[in-house]
Amino acid sequence: MKKTISFRLFFTVLGRGICQVFRFIGKLFGYKDKSTYAKVVWRISATCLTTLLLLFTFCVLYAFVTNVIIPKWTDFRIQKYAWENTPISHRIVFQQNYREKETRVYDKVAKKVLLKDIDWVVTSDDNDSLAVFAQAGKRGYLNRFTGEVKIPAVYSKAWVFSEGMAAVEKDGRLLFINHAGETVIDKGFEVHPELSAYAFHDGYCLIKNPIDGKVGLINRKGDWALMPEYLHVRRADSLWVVEKDNGEEAVLDSGMKVVLPFAKVHYSVTDEAVFATLPDHTVCKYSLNGKLLNCSVITFVYPLTYETDQLYYGTVKKYDEEGRVESEVIDTEPYHTQAVAHCRRYQGEYGWYGLISSEGHIITPPSYSDIIAIGADLYLCRNEEGYGVLLDSKGKRVE
Image 1 (cartoon, rainbow, N blue to C red):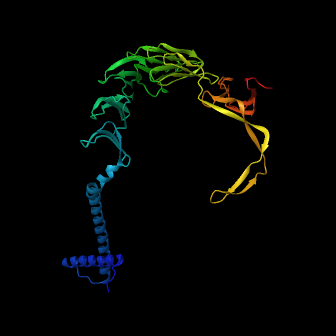
Image 2: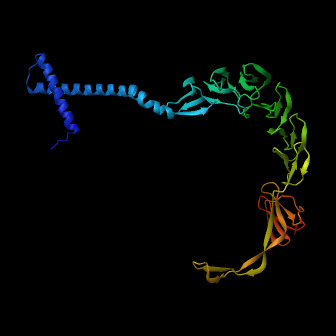
Image 3: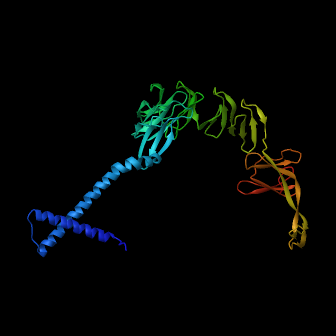
């Protein structure tokens, strides 16, 4: 029968063997004490030396595994998936290793690390050749196709290049530089903490006054094309929408000429038209050069129904497997028949409704959040707070 060797038996035999080795060594040096005391001393010494030998063997194996086996056979596989890639170009990537908390700029084709300890890299929307990077609390620019640093990280803040220029902050001043790192605009501007980006669009850049928070536009020379007098300025395709403190808005073209004047409206611009939403939620449509196309845009028209005094009883039918009626049960509760009201409900601004006749004539502006018919010529019109008024088919209030 084959005997099973346990760990206890293995180490017992190993310890005794080592004790015999040390006893043999002792005999070589002339030690021949065979007393019980000598045997105990030898066993204690052998146990200590055995423990030290095992610890030494463990340390050697650990160093070999961690420095030879893992780097050669395992670590390259782990590293392959430990790096998260953010593309900078077709061959250059920004990598983050969350396991080792390392960052770098890496060339995938040459398999070469170009820069280390980079906090982040951001490319521009217009695919400019330079990308902004952060390192040790400073900002600089690198070539996104080669990974080479073109402008050293010397700025406290920096933004992506747009139309050949980039905004940077240095010594508390807002400057604009070119691809060579040369300052091209220095007009005493300052960075406003609430303005997250500085970029040129169609030759203009939005600048916010750090004192009063008003905004305006500068041109590529750094001169004011639109003085900083407005609450908001937003770009809408080829046009600009500006808003005053009193809520009035106007639409300007690329030359800062008025397309639609200031009014208590909200302008939205698409590729084909400008839509103006009035305070009563009526939507007007204009061409891109300011010509009125539709004074009241209607998106949907819904029929309105109401309950009449006429009652009817519904039935519930039961069918067999072949689809034939087996039984029919009449409901115990009657229902009111429905009829169509004379007016319909239309939508102007999304979620806002008005009354319109069956012939298509607008009776009321879309100033109500809900309209229901309670008679052929009587309608309950509610505002956004839930309060309602009764109107007839001519839009007159019924007391």
